[in-house]
Image (cartoon, rainbow, N blue to C red):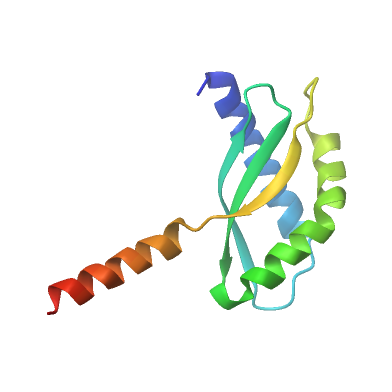
Length: 112
């Protein structure tokens, strides 16, 4: 990954985190964390990987983000000073859930 893309990813992560914490209305007790931002080399698209707590609220959180994508996109467009503003897409980060599943399997195998 180029240094420029890395800087764009960090900038988008910082800006979208700030916007989400101030202006995204989630029901009480639901928390979103941006785990990773992956922007295409041509800067046309960026995938924002999120994790949700509690996990049972994942569908609710993703649906809320999808409904608010245009609002969030508009906010990020005003904050980024780039020739091309990437189109954002929210993706569930399954890394932690998959790691928990692997650990459970290993514990089951090791316990027998």
